[in-house]
Amino acid sequence: MSTPILSVEHLTKRFGGLIAVNDISFNVNRGQVVSIVGPNGAGKTTLFNLITGIAKPDAGEVSFDGQNITGIAPHKLASMGVGRTFQNIRLFQNLNALENVMIGRVAKTQSNVFDALACTSRDRRERIEMVESAEALLDWVGVGANRFRMPSELPYGDQRRVEIARALALNPKLLILDEPTAGMVSREAHDVIDLIHRLKDAGVTLMLIEHNMNVVMNTSDHVVVISFGQKISEGTPAEIRSDERVIEAYLGVDEDAAQVAPQTVVTA
Ligand SMILES: Nc1ncnc2c1ncn2[C@@H]1O[C@H](COP(=O)(O)OP(=O)(O)OP(=O)(O)O)[C@@H](O)[C@H]1O
Ligand SMILES: [Mg+2]
Image (tube, rainbow, N blue to C red):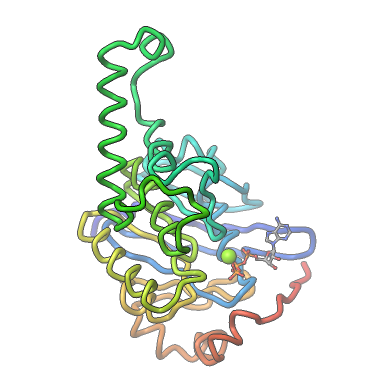
């Protein structure tokens, strides 16, 4: 079996007396779609923040593509090939959809300040290439017709798709999506299932946090279940669905109830 593209070992993060992520380990293999599920406040976003360098772990290690990336700065990680989207959409509100995606591409350009000032052919070529590739990405995620609209003018689903296009502009080896269907109506969520399948077919390895079990069950090769900061189970969607611990902690509860489950403080 090939080495995993991402390896998470014994990650732990405390916020005061709360252990938000408690000794979590798992692997993501190349080409897989891996979902992280668990009730509200389980530690999913914190786990993603530890993996993507936004928060520093108190213990544990993260390796990407064979390199130790624990605590590495997010922009360095982006240039190594890890793209992500956020639970609360983070688009630049004063830039249109196309410009938001072009921003994702800037990290890849070779031109320097001299090229830009002197308007060299390299700079011109790169600018044209940046616009064309951003347009192609927006077409690919299905927002091409709205490329000149500002984020606030776009439906929620389109805003998420623009964020995904921006992450794809870096040509990531691993794409991390935090609740890609949050706030979507079911038809839009269905489109996300289709998009995840197309990303996988395009060779992108995906890791997602998702509350919508329909999305999880229809897209994932592997599911990691966390509750109160701890990994309580992992396996294929079928294995997870029949795991008593998972049913008790998560699947057994009504999905609406799971969304509003109170957060419980685990004291150290
Ligand atoms: N910066 C922080 N400071 C203090 N506590 C935090 C911080 N970030 C998260 N927490 C707490 O850590 C726990 C895990 O939060 P986290 O956002 O990772 O959960 P989640 O699984 O992503 O939840 P949701 O499904 O609601 O997005 C929660 O109890 C949360 O209140
Ligand atoms: Mg979260």
